[in-house]
Each structure stands twice: as structure tokens, then as C-alpha cells.
Length: 339
Image (cartoon, rainbow, N blue to C red; front, side, top):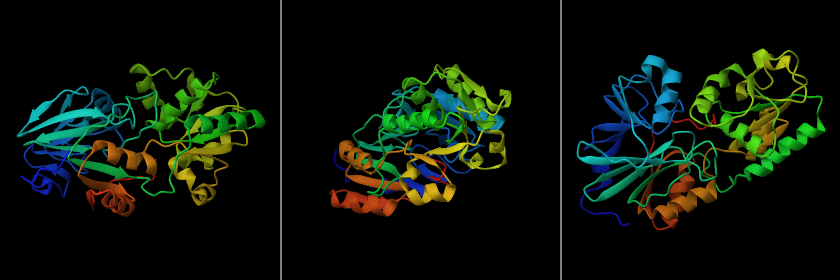
């Protein structure tokens, strides 16, 4: 698609003190502070903030927000399925799958013959715990750049899970403590282990339990998962999933000489693994890597690219080489370290 010259995107879609604001629609996308009307792409805390008067999101995202934020999830919560257009002010808004976590969405905004897509966080790999990413052809594509450098190339999931299974066989006397983000990554790892034939109980840090129970209620089969608090021994030979912050801290002393593993795209950087004391780094990410990011820019056919957070400079430079107009879009409150 080609950029219409009738009205620059900056005249109707722009960052302000609260985040990315759609002027003719009167709403923000993933605002970082309370606003009258918000569209939330997914449930991670740097995108789903408390205190908005009204929130539009997928049913799964709203369920996640209720669990994490309680009454602060929003005054009026409106659920919408993927693919259903909504007229909001002078624009039409449609949510389509982003493939990031359960319920994650891209926000498609149509206005006066122009189409902008706010991708939120997204990935292109197969993920049995959420709907797959959907390419939407558009005039403006707003992309993340968490792993926006050529060095970032994620390994196949099956390879990394295979490395974990080999380590379990090699060290049956040790607990394998797997650090992972509690919303999305934890549940994806469980299902990947199940698909690889691992049918033993998987033990969860208390911080992982409520979201994993929600996934199960929403139809994602995790098999036999149990809180570590119910264990009667030190879980030698078992898999325990915990927040990355619990790796090597006092909580982990209850485990049997744990093998510390960490599932993240950041494990591509060996220095990060060494800094965290990670014995088994697993390169499993819920974000696109560099080749997938470039592939997505090509497939959207967007003439203009805005980059919201991460390694913006490299993506802007490459997008311009590809013949696109491109700019960095500095938004407050976006995090990529928790990946």
C-alpha cells in the first residue's frame, strides 16, 4: 500500500504525555498512565496499566487485567473478538492477533482511506498457547524493536527444549529451575515441554500459579502443574519454573542443587547469561528476532515505519534502506528486560 498525501499520520496519530494518541478516535493505545479511553494490546504490565475510565481489549486480555489489577483494571471494560470492526469517533478500529501471548492483539486503525497498524509486542513463531500473528497490509506500521539488531536470531524452540531435556537426563539428582516471565512465557514453556513428550508434574513458583490457572480455564491444557509449596521433598530431577529474579536467591535454597536455566531471547548474549549466573541459557523469545522483524516490515507493504521501543536506530536505518520512511517513536514506560 502507498502512503496517502491527503493527511500526514502525525496529524492524527501521535505520542503525547500519556502515550500514543489517536486524535479522531479520542483514545490512547497502551497508555502508561490513566486516560479516559484506552485500547490495550495485551496483559503485560508495561502495556496494561491501571486506572483507565474505559478499556477496549480482547476477552483474554481483560481477564488477565482483572487478575493482575483487580478493581483498577478499568471503569468500563469492553471485550472484543479478533476481526470485529468498531467505529470509535471518526475511525474504525479492529483487533487482530499479535502472536505474543494469550489475547495479544495488533490495533488496526482505518481513517480517511489510510490504515495504521499498531503491532504492540508480537512474534512470528508458532505458539500453541495463543492465536498466531496475522500480517495486515497497511500504510503505516508501528513496530517494536526489542531484538532489533542483526545479532538477534532466535533458535528453533524444539532445539532449546531438547537441550533442557538432555540436561534433565544428565543431572537426575538436581532440580532444573527455569527462569521465565510469568505471563505467557511460563505457560508456553509448559506446553512446549508437553509436546516434546515430558509428562511429569511441572512445579510452579507461587507467582506463576494464578495466571497458569487462568490459561487452563481458558482452554490451554498445561497438564499436571503444581505449586512448589505443595512439594514434600527438594524436587530432585524435576522442572521448577520461577520468575528470573528467583534464580539463585533464598527461595531457590529449597531445591536440590538447582541447575539454573533462563528462557529468553536475551540468552543469545553470552555476557547476560554469565552475569546472571545462568548454567543453561535457552534462547526462547516471545518477540520477533531481526530476520522476522525485517520480514514483517516487507510483508505489511507499509510505506512508513515507526519504531516504538528497543533497538530503534538499527531498525530505522534498515527500513530507510528498504525504501520506507522511518522514525523512532519514543514512548514512556516500555520495558524489554522482562522478556
